[in-house]
Image 1 (cartoon, helix red, strand yellow):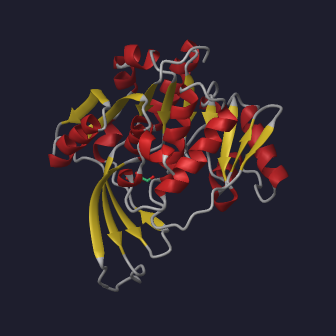
Image 2 (cartoon, rainbow, N blue to C red; image 1 turned 90 degrees about the horizontal axis):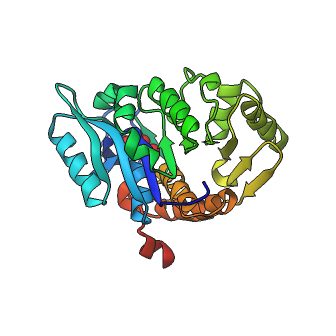
Length: 306
Ligand code: RIB
């Protein structure tokens, strides 16, 4: 990226989050009462888009919603966040994606996803948005849409020299690493890294070796997220440690998406990758001190004040 337009494309998912705050998870066959419930906007793609937009990037999404009330609400939410909805497709006779989420007092979450219309996204939708995506500094992807869409987007963007970021979540053993050649940033956690490479990730050296194994297959840079130990950026010849930011967790839902969306924003603002990751770690940490998914994402003004 020699010049920056501050534009980001997100090719991916959107969901309605059905968030239950519970004191504990019920055992099989057990019914328990939970104290609180909240409905919110989520989905890994939409979350990443909203994080980048709240920080000030110009964001376009390529995504599918169902022809139900949630679909209309998603489009309104994108617009409310200043996101370009030209390439949001409403799919007939499909439900919108939904995600029942359970958050325990530790802030830890358990998530089920029902993809609904997200499963209808195709490479043709990406081709239809080519003009918009070609003007972006970075294109973000996740795994809540068909894998062919990601392979196609990566190959097309690489041919145009556009930076791409793939967050391989939720983890999928079907992901074919050989089809990620040309991807700029691959952002797995250490478990996903171990699953995808078949290599150990127990030590720092293991993690670096597994990341370099991916780089040898054509991925440019690997960002391994390490939970409470921060993150590590691995390139062909360098390793950068991204220190963890300590906060008291309230709700960790969507923190990973806040990290990716804000990373792309800082990158598209001309910040180099290690510094963009350090800022993203600070941004994501703030979101886990608040309840909700997109509800917990700060604007640029709010982030400047913390
Ligand atoms: O990463 C958090 C997100 O995962 C939630 O918003 C939920 O919708 C699922 O996609």
